[in-house]
Image (cartoon, rainbow, N blue to C red):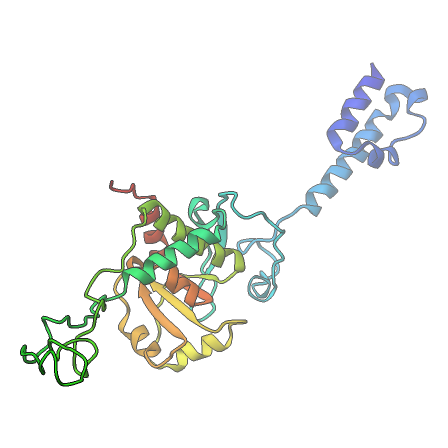
Length: 299
């Protein structure tokens, strides 16, 4: 009976080896007489474990909270496998590098399998669709000029011709030349949407996706953007995505910078993401894009 009670007490307090050093070796001989001393040892160990697992929070009393650890220390995230559709947690900041909390990125938008063939097809579709297709050449009937026969059929020793508007003459027509047409190719909406998800996943996996609480600037001076750009590592071109109407101060501050471009969330596309190695998005833009990706496709 005493042995079973002691074993249950040891299991409740923690490791058997940790308590084995504190329990009296004469327990079997003394029986229940040493039970009170073992209880004291277990309570002391439990109190030490409680103190050693205390959590430091901004609201905890005592010493000041080390805010510098949140901004200056680099967190090493474990290696993860892409394409598992897992939600991602990303910090939120602003142009002043202030901590604005965290945001959860939907896994079905920002953690999809990478497929280069889909990206290739979507970029081809974009570039083909944006061609104007206004090229045009004049056929024989459209060229301005006389219709009479330039010289007799025989007797001149020259080659026979029936008009001066032919393609072999200067100022003549163009045979089989381009005419106005559409260069657009067909691509399913599901593939277009998947291409945008893959591009967003690639930027998030590279650590080149930044989420801002807002994109407001104190002034319209270009130096506000230049100072922040100089603090970024391994960045050549930045694409800023705004959810609603573009702020006038932000527009004026970036219009002279060829390496910073602004686009509304409704116009975010695969080709623009690939042209810029860093993507800066506001909370509003991120929510709108996720909502856009979750909207059922009209067939």
